[in-house]
Image 1 (tube, helix red, strand yellow):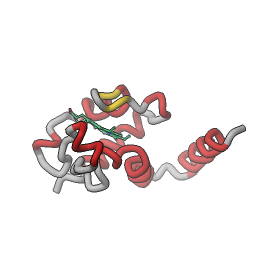
Image 2 (cartoon, rainbow, N blue to C red):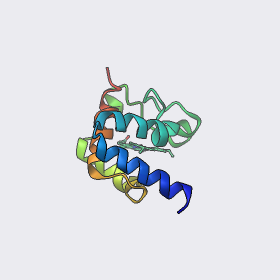
Image 3 (cartoon, rainbow, N blue to C red):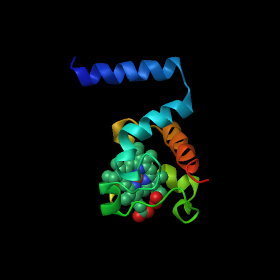
Image 4 (spheres, rainbow, N blue to C red):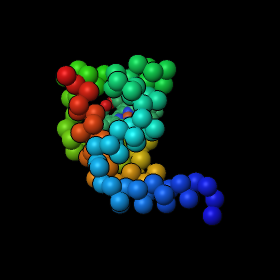
Length: 105
Ligand code: HEC
């Protein structure tokens, strides 16, 4: 068993043991999403600027429904690829949408 598989199994075990959804979303966001969308949700990273990621701190940047957000996370929305095959579930995607909504003041 290689390290990645062990780490994945460990992560799943932790998620089952402690379904603190919001905390997990924060960790997932930091690890997988912040490179483009920015730790602050503004999308002002090198990748985010190149790909024109929206500013999630504004009403304009949040002009998409929860359903669209979940779909984008799971199936992708060009140029972003989907995260379903990377192990993000629909429940995770819903939590991520909630997390992103919180960027808007
Ligand atoms: C490689 C850069 C990149 C990464 C990594 C990335 N995204 Fe995106 N994401 C984008 C871009 C660009 C869009 C499309 C913006 C548009 O045209 O609507 C987008 C769209 C979205 C949307 C749909 C709403 C919108 O802005 O149109 C959501 C929700 C979203 N991303 C969440 C996430 C989450 C959660 C992660 C981590 C699991 C993530 N993204 C990772 C670049 C990225």
